[in-house]
Length: 110
Image 1 (cartoon, rainbow, N blue to C red):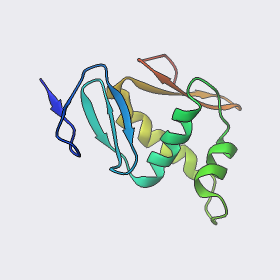
Image 2: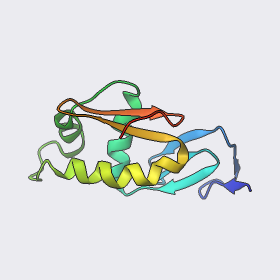
Image 3: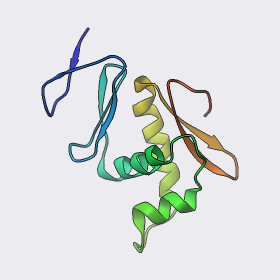
Image 4: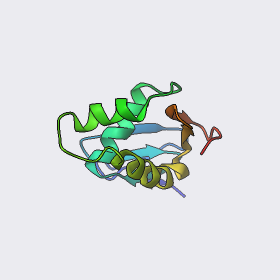
């Protein structure tokens, strides 16, 4: 089965992985997933720091800056995003009391 990118119409390669923040889509493993704006911002933050552990506070500061929002919203974003990006071969690993880490290619973690 082939998959086409909803923004450009090109066939998505099985090994391709891309984030198109403007369109709000993530492409990987021959699949395309839509993400809401805030989840996309969180994913981009993790993507730039791929393989490194980042704290919940770092993510919150980058995404919400000076907004008056409960910082536990990050956990909600992570829970929703994990389910959406898992079919793309993306794992968001939790490290208790440390933070989160983005892994490509089905790395293990929760």
